[in-house]
Each structure stands twice: as C-alpha cells, then as structure tokens.
Length: 125
Image 1 (cartoon, rainbow, N blue to C red):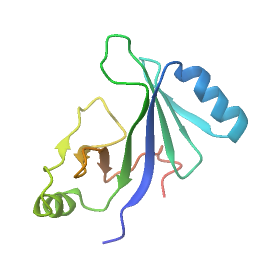
Image 2: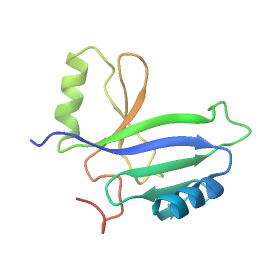
Image 3: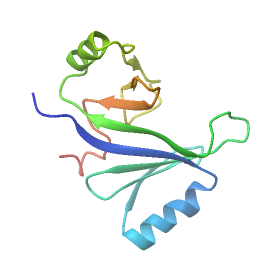
C-alpha cells in the first residue's frame, strides 16, 4: 500500500467567487468545479483548494475547515484509526463528489479520506 497523500485543503470564505479569482489570477490555479451554492474548487494540478461559500444561516465559521488525504484503502485505514482510539471515519453525503469519508483526529480536526482522489480525472495522479 502506498503512503496516503495530502491532496485537499478547504476554507469557508465569505465570497468564494472573489477568492477563487484571486488564486486563479495571482497563483495560476484552475477552477474545475463550482457548486450550486457558489463554493469554488481549484487545483494547481496536485492539490485541490476548496473555497466553501459561507452561509449566513450556518454555524460553520469562516476560515480553515478541513483537509483531505487520497488513500489506497479506506477500510484498512479506518480499522487502524479505531485501533488508535479515534472514531471510525463516516461516509460523507453522496452529493459531495470529492471525498467519500470524513474522519477526525485526536484533537477534533476534521479531515477527509478518498480512494478516488480530490482532483478532476484529467488531473489525478
């Protein structure tokens, strides 16, 4: 089994379109997906940057939200996590195409696990 790879970082932002334009124009990132709620997903060809549109009716604060790893085998990693004393990763809603599972580390930080990866198919490695 290969080493899990950090491939995803997510922030909740007040104006996802403006922030996406900044990263696109200043750092040559490419927008590859826009959610109906206005969230923008960008890539540099290796890392996916999710700019989650803040919702006024949400308790989710603006700022860092979570990160994600591409893995070969979620089942094995899940077993190892439970053995290490953290909750078993849970399936994410099916309307989230970029990660299959949500996990939590011993300090309560969220992270995603995905076997298929976080980038569009033509960018995935």
